[in-house]
Length: 395
Ligand SMILES: *Cc1c(COP(=O)(O)O)cnc(C)c1O
Image (cartoon, rainbow, N blue to C red; front, side):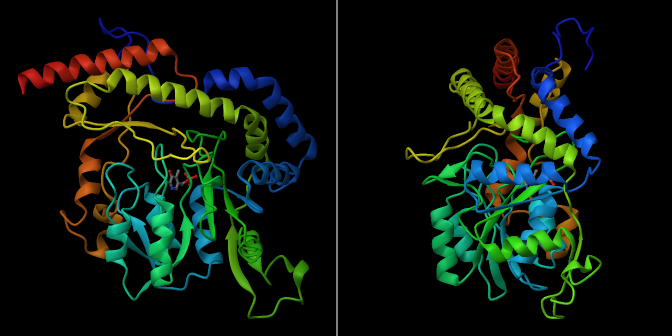
């Protein structure tokens, strides 16, 4: 992107939190000073305070802070009793970590095609994908809305599956007043910088109402039970001993997240307003195949716009055109999980997951974050609209 190109305005990044941090700087600076004063830096006072604040925000009985959303998924699956080779049903379209966490925990991903409206696993396809190996189902809540948790729970009950949620993107989302991640045994949050509540590095958390799962996750994030932290010795029997790793959260991340948490509801409202503005501008554009559609229907349901994603036949050409005008976009996600080389050993073929494959061909995320200015949004829509209009007439 060249700022000197004749028709390019100021660059519009895909994501930025510069204005948020400028506004929050006094609070962040004070929070960081407290971390330095404590001298603890890892798994100290700020991590505990963040866990308490997030328990209050989400309604979870237990929140366990860890170093990333990915490790949160791995520890959650292990704490729920995943045994080597257990099948975990996951959507064919998601971020890599949904499936990699299953393998890292020793399980085997079993892919399910998505509902093209919600990008989440399709409950009918889920029912058909269950095998004797299946022991878990892990719906993912992507982008702006939640998986149909009630339908997933019904399938899980029928087949005796344990439900855990990849709610890494879903902070603030609720169904029937229950926060994402608390519809099964547990869920996770990611605080990767670009997430709805983003840190200044990596961090994540496990949410659960189950005290045993919470205990086990807490042990696993710090080397396990009956091992190098022998403060619990000799109460730990070989049977309850557990080998864990180091997945602790940094206090610097916890401090920044605590400073940002009071802004979260305002940011969610701002995201809703920006998404509505995008939709109003793009709704009737020729060449746009799909815009985000909420499935929150009741007063105690809530969706949160984490990214704003459109679908178009001309995705790659459009992304290149926007990039030439200094407008950042991202492809979420360029390849369905079963077709990524890392999961090639599972033996899936093109055509096995038609809805996931169509989404991977057509989906493009537009610049979207609470600091996005209305003028920037207008420029994105103007640039996109004029490109799709000419692409259509010359096609
Ligand atoms: C971000 C994300 C993760 C992983 O979170 P990290 O904190 O980046 O490890 C997992 N699943 C989904 C759906 C995500 O969007």
